[in-house]
Length: 388
Image (cartoon, rainbow, N blue to C red; front, side, top):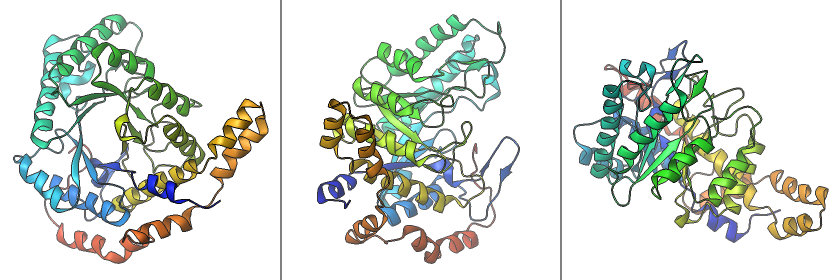
């Protein structure tokens, strides 16, 4: 099964935001590992992210995390990104690393802490104005560890009140994108544990609020592509945080654990019109590579998304629909599997070469000398690690 020109044209529209924090030192709750050449500030994070885009043509934007990526001159950072061939993407808030947030942020029983969390998001919106960014992504670590620790309903009321204050401060063309997570760091309950809770709050807020789906933030066995379908039906799937997991929120390279799941998710994106510009859907990575080199890890991830999207686009939708309407269970499944098992790597190499990109971006990066350059140049000074 060969890739036709229409499929190649569709692939050319794929754009994936890479996270600034993926280029710094990262680890687990047991250890943060230090690798040579790590970026020392947001400017160097953008330099590293630009390497991914230059070699793949797939990553034109860099998501920032506040306050980790705060700078004194946003115009300078934006100009730096433009000079490197990328732009600043989604602004991510952080209300989970301050001591005040031990019992939550927007859901905290203390009104002073809730006000502090709201004010942080208002600062993020000001940064969005300064950088021309559309999306504010909110992930909350809020929740409880023990039954009776706090009033579950009151926490939802506080959450709604806080989100409303943030939403009302958005500019006309800005969006609030609300992420969810099944568990961790809270273990009895999370205040935004699932897509239904996120969607409920977004619907109450208004048209400028959408859901962010992180592929690692679900209970084991969850049918993620069904969630994608539902959110696209409602026009409320704002963004993806692509990563891969074996057990929980592992934040591994996209497709590492279950490439077939990634294929199924991307088919529902295609089926639901998520590739259309008017859908507003933003593809993002959210990964903290703990042991592998940072830049090649991001290259591998965006290539995996492209490959599974190419396979998803090969599904014969007319044949699939005919089999479904005829009740041909095995025939319909075969249409799926034929596309999934198609090896598109040679076609994608040709696609890259036709656009002046290296046929093998991983090999091109290894041969570029960039890793050796940054290891030599970035000696001294504090590296901008995860949480820095």
